Length: 307
Image (cartoon, rainbow, N blue to C red; front, side, top):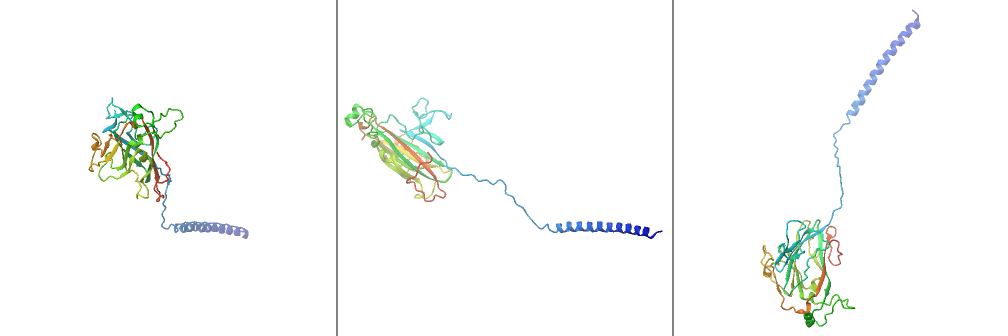
């Protein structure tokens, strides 16, 4: 047999052996790589926070009010939200509008609206303030008119200077005598609408004085802001005549009935005819300002931002 043929067989055999060796080496390499990666699995942990949100807070001052006139409460005549209110809640009673549920104030939400006052009349209402974030709260009142309105014969007898506002050239809105005969008192109430022993008087005096200027309900000078969800009650009463303070013992009182129940007294005898038909109007503003990052806030000079 020729030698080249034998050499060819030997070469083929050698190639087959080399293929087996290479395949074996490749398999060993793959196993080695897997082994290397397997050795890298150290202890580990992953934590994920999803749904992160940043939302600006809100500051909303809301107010409700309950009022009484000569010992009668202003009450709705029915259970429906739109039911009208009367003094005493009787369907055939005299309409009233100074009691309302918690809300933002709007047109017609007034703390007093009386068009037939007589000397000796008195009224009490309790204003309830609510904020949804800790807030400093200030109040201010402004007398917008104290007008003679008209001049009746009895009025001219006691007020010879009475000038009919309808007369040509008469534009004076502060020539009346009603404001000086209306006396007010404001105090920190506990919510029962009655001035009681231990409750602090905020302001007291003639209408011309009390229905003007600013006063503090809560600012840095008083210490703590009004907390979110806290009920803050401000009692207010006026007398058409001379007003006196006769605080009731602390407890669950009510101003319904005689004036003695209310914690004040009212004497109309000093009032003469000079204030007949006179008209007084005024605005009351409550201002809430955030307390956070505003620790030195003072009510003086504050601008109303929520009514």
